[in-house]
Image (cartoon, rainbow, N blue to C red; front, top):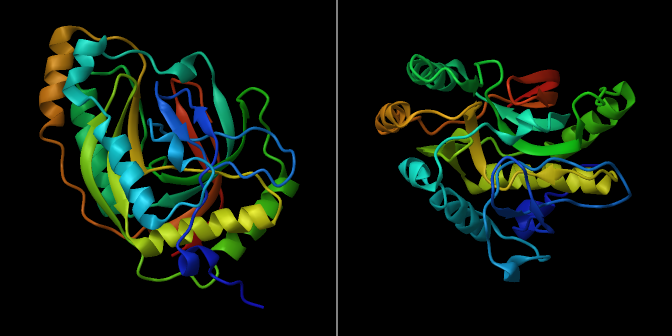
Length: 281
């Protein structure tokens, strides 16, 4: 029996508990769905949004509105006035877990990698996400201390079943419009805006995990992280970096080439993602 497309027909997603996520110093409403007690999970980026949106279903329009608020909160060149760049917090708290992510073609990853090489030439204090690691997070599961995390083949099999249920009968008309390159004191990312079909696909995956009894923490924005900072920099370095960021390349609107079920590890100095199952879109 084919699974009903609940997220698209009702145009709703999950909006849940406000939670601080350590990568950035602001607040985000998480999408954690607790069907049964499970280990804690990672969210991605964060921003401050209205409390009146807490604990109710989210429409596509509300998702886009919240995403815009998050992206608008990135200070970019104003970072220096707020204390400058600093080592990302995962240096103190290495993390790992399972994740469901979008992957991109060579055209997108090559443009990002080429630009990041320019930045790294004078700002080497970066955790750069290479071509193999560039992705957009749909959701994460079972975040834990990196030293303690060991992928479990039985869990991976169950998560595969949930992903396969979630992508059943997805629309081929999915795409992401990438816009501004943004940065704060800890990291650099490219902002993204999904069309409604892609957003529905993400919600269907979240619904499938919920129905199967897993606690999936959904990403609250569509984006590609390109680097994390590992140390402070001088004003001269920051000035050069800020100037170069103004010439960042425009990424084309694109359709992801695949969804990966993967595991990730980040200790603040390196980020690695290992694909366990790929679903070509």
